[in-house]
Image: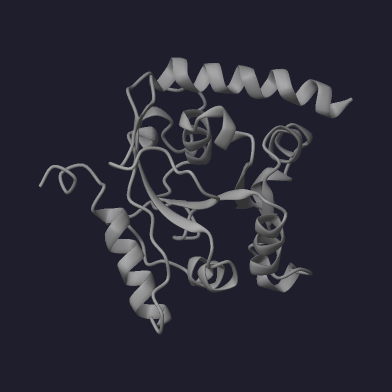
Length: 212
């Protein structure tokens, strides 16, 4: 029954997100990804993954799963329904003391089953004055676990202004979702070097940087 309800709810969320943000994708020169991918993005709002999901072509949208915090998306019946049933999110327990499953193993299983992922390597919403926070190690571990996946940087612009923290009514404002060229882990590349390269690739898509 839930799956029957989830489909029209997903459509309603898609239309609402597009109406409020007039979101548009900006693709790299190679166009939309053709392979299974991990889309890694900057993180300023709980709605970030919705904008990425909303601009993906339907063939890609059907097989993508966002990675999100279980503490937020399991907090109420409505959030649980949206996170689990509508978006089929990979829900990660962020509290290490409460974990019963390794987060990388959870994400790796979803990838082995054929899903692409939407991942926020900063680990939590960025509420600092810096454009990006340091990346957690998860993106590196996924790159080693599934080297056949493309790692696609994605910069989301303006969503933090559409839905400021603590507000419940969105402010209509045009948002863009900019996709960069896919990355792969280089042979012999260290975790630190890879994460810095991935962070630089993402930051290069930000407003100002992208126009330089």
